[in-house]
Length: 324
Length: 262
Image (cartoon, rainbow over all chains, first blue to last red; front, side, top):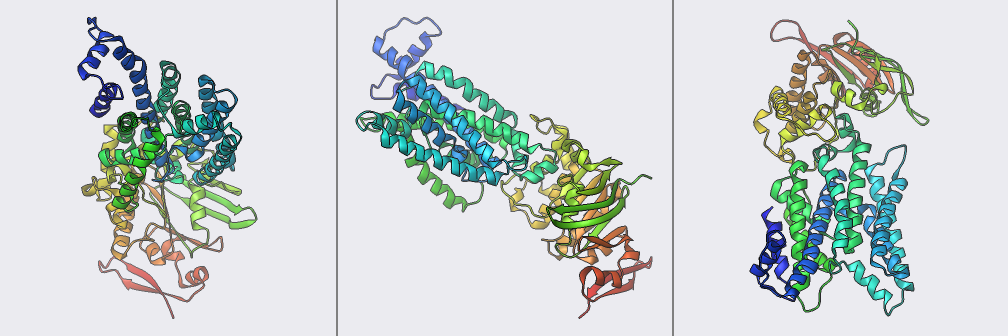
């Protein structure tokens, strides 16, 4: 719990325009209690208009992607599963690319991305449905099909996009970034991520039972289709909302649940809240690095992959493919 | 006394492939029924029909006079526990956590086990003699211990019937004996049990009832000592089997065992 708050604070004074931590503290406090401003207006604008919404957004996206990943790994009983297993990211990415191509308006990009994300998973679910059930294996395979289909459509958009302005915009958007954060984005995304997170937290103990396998869960009185439905809807809303404002930030939903399990153990009752905190701290940290490592900002999706992939390789070696 | 489980003219097939046909049985409270038969004779399918996972194509399967297929799965989970044969271990939950999952039918969709549920889970662990390993990760205990932990989980469901699918199949000699002894002890708690096994000697350890199954039919069913005969064993397995009878060391009766005869 302390770690995300600490990173949160650090994130406010670090950046290309470094600020004194004390001044940042005073600026924040001045919103609650009256303090005589002895700082210049630029500092206040940077903290309040740029870094604060950006940091909050990174925290929400990190928390949301991580808890979704943990829920999916439990439900699919597979350590290699992440939030985009049902095709939500590719579909949301295509929605955004399409919106950039036809309009470029920020709100439309977000809306298209979110709706296509939902539609992609709905399509996966329909393909996977056999005999009134949706076996986990069918879901995974349909997810691969749908993700591949939307990836192809993304390539198609890139191919027809104007290489002078549209193509770089699409490419940059797909790499993921928090640079366009605003309070408007926060206001539209926080309710969605909160809703999905609440859904997952409510059923988190049942995830333990579901992770023993569907037939066993049924014999213990679990309505597996209903539970799976709640989990899929919750994670899809979270992920689509996250992608719609931050682009494709990979590896978070895959790696953070493993870190959580190393710290608090496999019980989803404690694991899910833990991944929320760790995920939030992690993406704030990544975003700080994205802003400070080089003079030009590095897309967040590149950093999460560059850090996430070797770390995951290390985890695989350490656990030899088993669960910890 | 009314039978707890009743099967009448039960028939099941996958599309055109018939698994079993025309099965009849009655199981009373506290009774152990062993279903004996070679691999692929339809034992497991029969258990899955009794558990509500599959539906009969013809005939009826009833629990306390009510059609099993008509039960809500939560209600059924309070009455019928299922011990699975194949069980992939995944997360390293503690043994106690696994047993607490047996309380699921008594919890709401958003609920988790209370202190009382934990107490019941510990009691169940104690009944199978595994309370001392309650904090051990379930993935790091032996196959025999795991089987008993799963048995404790079905006990935590407080069921009237426990269905056991080959409870001894992956265990060594000692753990087979431990599991069977625990199962035998549990039947004294008025729980009815249906157990499939391909080892006739395991059936002979239980003095209750046996159904011998082959090719989707009961070759014979009834009291163990009447039904397990050399003739019926030959019909069930299609090989020559000799049955031996020795005086019980206690002097109370006779002890029977069988062996293939080459």
